[in-house]
Image (tube, rainbow, N blue to C red):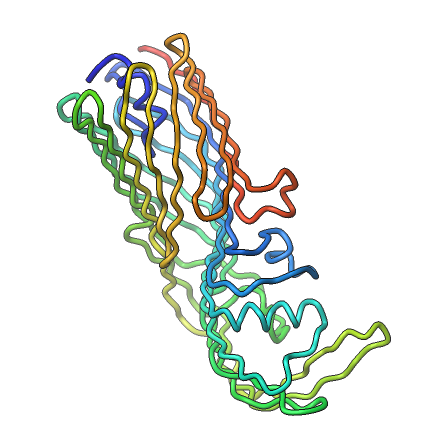
Length: 360
């Protein structure tokens, strides 16, 4: 591996590289990422009024971590907050109308299909990095998760506005939760029984000019819940009323069962990939993330300055988001957005971290 490639590799790798056997590091990092296809992230997650476009994907994954690394091993504690939403275009149109207090299009049949995974958790992670021959390295981690918020399930069916304030169709709901945001059932505080997750990654310096990094996050995972609240319900008719401000509220007639159950939740795996062509003190590359049938691709340029600074500029092909990242020795800061106003952003990423290394 060339000297420039060796200095760029820590900035291009998705996971921490192994240290010398006699080195100990204390590290911390914060990573915030969110995306709402053709929509603004903030009003979507907050349920605020706005302009909602037909789309199919939205997610956010936020994590704060602090830990210690010795040689190739690391031990850390972390907190995670995450949402994964996959839905039909009609579902987003229906959601937008509901939030904005607007009526549904007369006669149109809305095909509703929504799946959701939500988790707020704390955990303990054990990681291991190993450099096999100077050009090929691997990473493996196993995490214990203790969750305190959950939402997992599906809503599907059809809705049609027949005439006046009369609506028909059939919606089928089946989900578990720590907060019943749909039917406002009063429930007690929830905690998971047991949870785990694993990550795996590899770096390969193919030649002096080509570098590849791959990382699968939550590749095997499960969160076990005991006696978690669950609702299975069907709505097949509805009426509507209009308030003094002209906002329309639709009131479905719901029948079903509210109970508690044992449930195993699975989070979608996040697949990260990067391939870079290195030249001199710089590199050009393509970076991507794939999660739950969503694929986001960045073009990026990285450069090494004065042998210690690394800068990275990226452009996302789907959203037009521009990313800027700087790393100096053991400190880094990065931000990416398609808008200067975070409340109007379709894609938003913030990452920062620091470490202190000592030799024994």
